[in-house]
Amino acid sequence: MNTSSSQRVLSGMRPTGQLHLGHLHGVLKNWLNLQHEYKCFFFVADWHALTTEYDNTSIITKNVWDMVIDWLAVGINPGDATLFIQSKVLEHAELHLLLSMFTPLGWLERVPTYKDQQQKLSNKDLTTYGFLGYPLLQSADILIYKAGLVPVGEDQVAHIEFTREVARRFNHFYGREPDFEDKVKDAMRKMGSKNAKIYKELRKRYQEQGETEALNTAHALVETQRNVSLGDKKRLLGYLEGETKTILPEPAPLLTPVAKMPGLDGQKMSKSYNNTIALRESPSVIEKKIRTMPTDPARMRRTDPGDPEKCPVWQFHKIYSDENIHEWVQAGCRSADIGCLECKQPIIESILAELAPIRERTQRYLEEPESVRAILTEGSEKARTTARETLEEVREVMGLLYR
Ligand code: TRP
Ligand code: SF4
Image 1: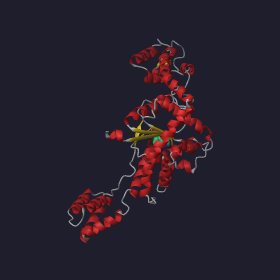
Image 2: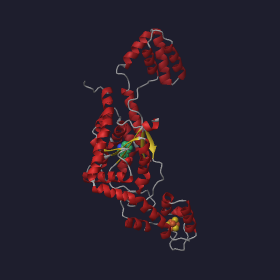
Image 3: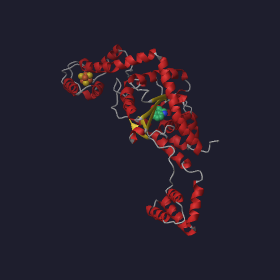
Image 4: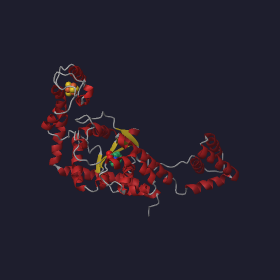
């Protein structure tokens, strides 16, 4: 196994219900590639949904099933990736609690989505404990699997950066032998008081002024000590650089690389803009939605020439059509040789062809809801096994193992 395939990938999605083409061409295509290359954990962030939907919980369950069925229908494979529901893995909550003990309030208040979302969702009271702690819950989601890579959109990068800081702080406090400082002091004593004094001064110069010269001198000093054991030398060197053991590794974001799928009106495709094509959309609705899509307003009449750059249909061609069709559209639109309905036809066909097998698989899962439940139960158990291992380590270094 190469290093990349031994890495864990984790990503979560809030249960928003049925997914659409924007999800398929953004997140899901990315997941489909990753599931073959890495050990992937994909989960439904149902607790995260509660941070904003605490007053309207009735739709959460249905949204969870709909979303997971769509994952499965596009080909997310429970044989490759572990699929689970966040609230079925209680360990996330315990880690969240433990991390909360040393996470400064200011860090949470400074996460950009905190104020942004409060303003955007101003009809809701989001001055809650749970909402403020949202990014920390996300950190627990990630750190409990020691995930190295987290596929996310641009809007989530700040949360990954925050998670890195939380991990660093955790390792700083707890990533040491319990009696590390005492052992270092013993080792210093063995150097003799004169050398110990020089060592301490050099360490201070390095740590406070960043003088690498001082660091090098201190290294040499430690290496030449005769009365100091190898283990103690290692400790003295570690102490110089503030070395800590990495218990919770820092994750990196993996930005979704795919072209942005625009909505029917050219804005970002999103349920709240009412401009989506759902993965389960029926062929007749798909056809109607594309046929009524707005085009370049300059083409009032069939004979008016247009500009594809000003038309959302062209954005769809960029995703769905090949070079030949691209040339046909560019020339035909600018010369008014083709009409807009004609121009849209290849897109209708491509989307119908893309969604036909997905719709078929969706149908099958809808008819066998037990199989979907079984996949999630099994996935949640599997996730728990990994989560427990991390938590065991965390409890130990935080002094919570009562054996
Ligand atoms: N916050 C993410 C979103 O709103 C969802 C999420 C929760 C998540 N926990 C996560 C994503 C962990 C990646 C990793 O889209
Ligand atoms: Fe848009 Fe095609 Fe019509 Fe040009 S011909 S305005 S690209 S739909």
